[in-house]
Image (tube, rainbow over all chains, first blue to last red; front, side):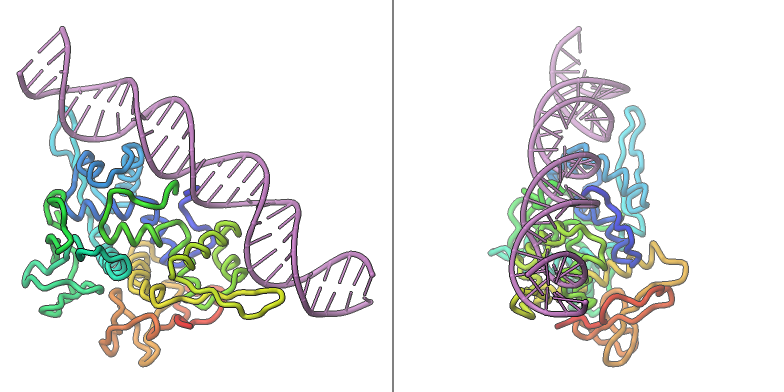
Length: 161
Length: 161
DNA sequence: TCGGCTTGGTTGCATGAAGCAACTCTGGTC
DNA sequence: GACCAGAGTTGCTTCATGCAACCAAGCCGA
């Protein structure tokens, strides 16, 4: 997009979209939630151009949605983790996931299911456990293969660090 | 964005973003929810380029998120309404709204508040009425001016048609 | 009847973001 | 010494976006 801000719009949805509304940004947050923390993992799992991935990671770190931590010196190598701010995007992602499932379903059913770590219940559109009724956050949930799963899913299933 | 699809990604979030992840799309859905139904109203309330608005409306109609209805013949004039599919984006918009409120707050407080039509209770991040506890949809909620409201808000407050 | 106004677009052009491939840089391995 | 891996960066091309001007069909007022 030419400019990523929405001048003249001062509501909170526009502000949110200025930060995470760019192409790829939300998918990067999502892939980190799935446990892909390294540049190469993300690049492979998303099929994104490397320069664009580099620019998005930079911006997401600047916006304090991701945090970059070195896991080795010499040569320096980094991993990216979600901050609280990043983890708090989980409800929005769940809402989009469910909307996508409802209106563009795969014939075999969803590839991934989000379940409550504690009781194994499925997670509703609003991020509520359908089994125990609790209001969940990113830390309470994990993904498991759904009926439409094809390949082994990338990396782990951990949402938080 | 160069291309709006995400080839190789077959999960539901990516599918949802292919449809409503383009710049402006979600803001157009939002402004229609706020009661701006006509081309000129949307153009003014969003400050979007007219050709881009035209292209986005076309696509949103194609995707059956909006429905175009003539309100007069000669010359033909149209209004745009949300379909069920469009109304079902409400939980995602509420999640983004709350995320934006939390992390980029206006000093005076939110400009708009979303309240439950029936009991007047405020609507939580997950689209649940904080007063009566009901799980709400777009039709159950309306927006009212918040503490940070400045100008009279565009058009009405109706969410549905 | 003539020009101007309103609504809802479409067209043409300039700019900049996304995609792709090649390159860099640092260290480890054979 | 040659080669490989990880994490980017650089250069080039292409397409989407923003802007402004234009079009079209009816209505309005003088």
